[in-house]
Length: 68
Image (cartoon, rainbow, N blue to C red; front, side, top):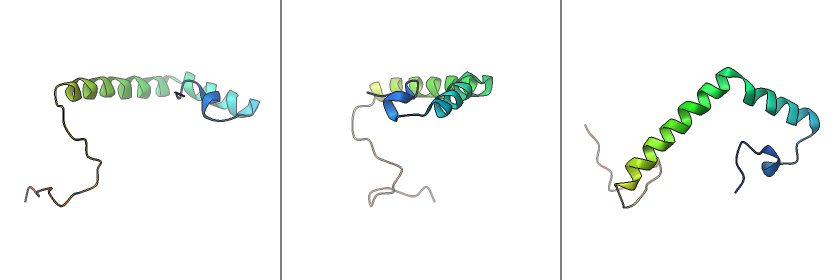
């Protein structure tokens, strides 16, 4: 399964695009963002582990109730 850490798995990048990608990944701001996202994903994975059932997308469904 391709990951963002392996851009070659996602597309055939030109040398210039690969250099730009590597530069972006090395930025401190990017690393901080990725660290936050990974931490959020780990928390969600733990929550999901304890909540078997259906997963719904962000779309509203007829059975959804408003909090109004």
